Image (cartoon, rainbow, N blue to C red; front, top):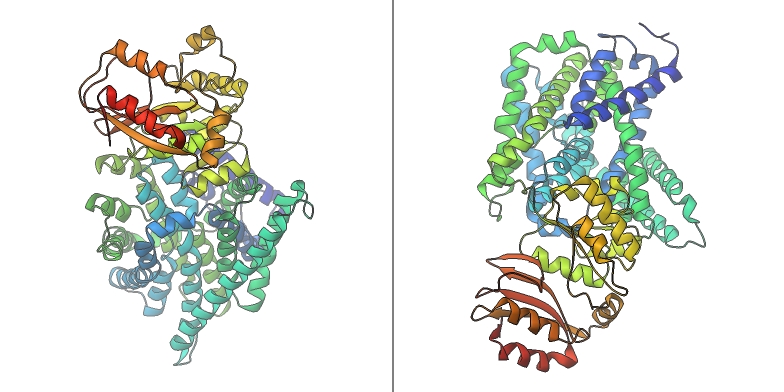
Length: 616
């Protein structure tokens, strides 16, 4: 069936529906969404069902693509934590500088050797595949859950390299289409100017937006998301008005500026932008892949595949190993990062722009260039997207299914617990619907899922079924119980813990849900949060010189004054877990970490020493 070619609104509406349905199908099949989007775009394009034909949009296609990319990159910048980047700043800086140059040069050489194209066309291809892209990398990382350092480096690369790579590609296009001998030198100066201008505009207007959002009397909460969206579009198009293609850098930096401030509306903003990003990614991939002609891809033949193979197996590993030299990254982690270089929406969008402009100026090769970049996107996304989980498992950098904890409620005591659990390399994730509490947990470099823990969708986002345990620690016992009840519906054998602060929860209810009490049944949450905030407590860790009898340990810990000491974590053979006064064994070298009021430190030390505990 073919739609009327002049019916633009219907075509765009259909593209949105097809894109969203494709991502829903991909989620059900547990495969990368872009895989299904690529197939759907080709199937619904002129070479397939002919439902989607982007050519009828004319020049409006590029305006639509640019606007959508701006929103997508802003959303990526929102979630990029600068604190995480500082830990890996050496390799990230190298990937953004040396890595960019090596990728462009390597891809140019690969295209020249494999396809024998004119150098100008090869240079354009080399600059176009610099980018990886958060729209592909971030969903993959969420799905496979690799170790934190690898996750943070790949996510930062995907977000930051998009504006840099896109601008380099645009400058390269201007240089190769210019007849002036000094164009290359001018291009380098122009690149620096556009990047600097975009960064300045993004930081300046991002700071202005933060200032406005921090004043609820000025901007009511109901307007936060739409005001932010308006700012994103204004920053992008306004920056482009002064310096062509500088808007992509401006929106990325604006996103980072807003995302790294403690805004009470930040997590609502991220949720809104995520949903909008899903819509735009679906729309763009359907439109851009429908713009590809299968005949052009087939015309590349084996040389085209050889070029893609060279990019994947030669250029990318070389870039990663050079950029990571002298760092603490293991060889296995470097191998995995070498494998993770899928291209995404920005590469497709800029290539589509180039193909159109090349046709306008009478330069040949636009169709071939677009076909090769599409082939790179298709092969890298399908091959790396479907195999990333297996590769991570084989290289032993994937987090195990029972790794880490989910803590419901982000307050002083729960964050203290999170730090202690994280010392054993456990991944700790917080769930909270209070924006300020979430911001505090993120400032402590924890991953946070913003939302109501009684919502199963929120629990699924925190991947509760893959964790070692879920600990409900809010100050509302009803919320704690209901959240754990929802967790039990998701998993029948997931260890669940609850705090009892105030009235004792019905024991039968806990038994039915198979929920254990965390810490002591007598402790007061508000009391300990107050003293932690006032810095009136210390953390003490004690170790058993010799094993203790179970009954002796139980009597001893029950005799401790709950207003002076709160045992929270026990550790044995380098594995930490919640303190359990009813443990069935108290072996030698078992360690207990507890909160102790400063005024009671001497007394607590004496009590533990009398029973054979020593300081760690």
